[in-house]
Length: 135
Length: 112
Figure (spheres, each protein chain N blue to C red):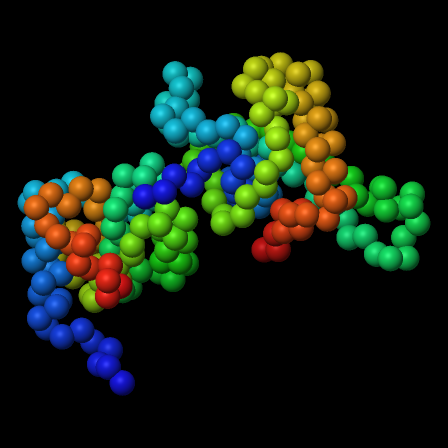
């Protein structure tokens, strides 16, 4: 009985607009809160995956193809599928519960996660996280 | 080649141990609660019937692998597993959270 729904775990969102997208758990609420009386977690995921970059591409084209669009969401545990992968990118300071309260706070937080995801993608690590799940 | 069907003696012992868990321990029956018990680390052993749909079976096995919980493939279908639990309905998968007086957790995951 090892707790596996921990911050840093990569999950796949199963329901909703972002179904099929990979995300990383930023914060988990096992017992729920008053508004959400069920186990749920705050995830930061990829809304638009970066495109495939080939050797022929110019620098401008590579930069355009490596763009990532991120999303932040509070999801129920039953609507995610955990995987054996982890992504150790520090998002705790950027993605907080109150960053989801208003629209402009959410946009700034997701812009910051987008930057961090793009840096991680360009470094070439965690390649599985940035590939689209084929189904 | 070892016989694929387990001997009558060991199926009996699994059924006996399950009956003891039903009487004295804590368990949950059914797919939704099995996943919930695995997520919240309450489950200690998961038993799956042999006619469980393969996608569901592999999903439960994956969750159990992440939670480091043993999975036992019951030698019988969901009707038999329901009968072994003493219930009058079919049980496809169940999760044992507290074995009570039974030694099912110590003895069964050895032979899987």
